[in-house]
Image 1 (tube, protein in one colour):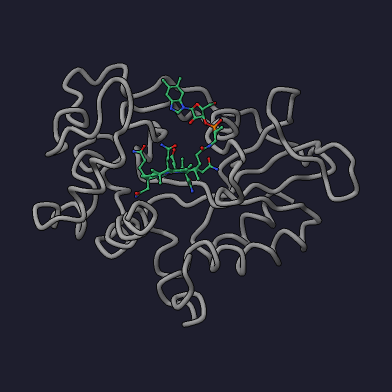
Image 2 (tube, helix red, strand yellow):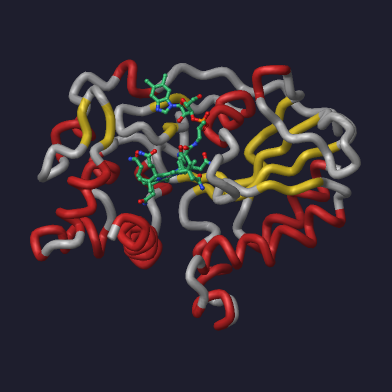
Length: 225
Ligand code: B12
């Protein structure tokens, strides 16, 4: 089943990011018939692999208010149905499903100083697009273990690069960030992606193409304007 799912996701530029057997603190929803979920599979994008599939998709998605969310649903709802999974999305809510908590159960990701999760190979260039909830464990592999690459990063350029100091040890000041990105001084961040995120030395070869960077920054601004 996992190999067939991998094949179904590949044309969408998405990947199976791992999975886990839910425990009581995981706040995983019940299945449609009210029974317990026995396995959660996380689906996501790694690097820019998903961008061509989305960018070349039809106009309906691009005209809508949340084009990537709509395209993702259109693409993944039928895949979930094919694998008899209930599907939930990161944008469902609020309240939101705890995708980052689930991610940490499924693969070796850790909280970075920027608060988004860092992967030892893909760095900050990955995201979660859906979770498939299953009635049976499909034989999940044991998640790989790896320390956070941030532990051995003495320079922490991510924390010193933001022109308006939006990141600190205490959190991310999204309003200060949005004000800057929306101003003439924020052109570099707006058009080529967050400078702090781009300063991270881990997984640079997975960084998103410029068009995807600009798309995500615009979507962030639209939420914060
Ligand atoms: C709301 C939201 C935002 C809001 C945040 C508002 C706010 N201040 O709360 C805004 C619009 C600002 C935002 C911005 C961005 N977001 Co956002 N966002 C979300 C969303 C939809 C919900 C987050 C949430 O409230 N979850 C509810 C809580 C309960 O979930 P949780 O998993 O249990 O949360 C745990 C972790 O957050 C963790 N945690 C977080 N910080 C820390 C710090 C420490 C020290 C520790 C120990 C734990 C910890 O602990 C929490 C409790 O277990 C998630 C998707 C989702 N459903 O999770 C994306 C999500 C978190 N965002 C994501 C991204 C990529 C971004 C942006 C980079 C997008 C962009 N290009 O602009 C920016 C930058 C964010 C940043 N640098 O911090 C990704 C992160 C992927 C990753 N690699 O981790 C997610 C998962 C969406 C996705 N599709 O993958 N986001």
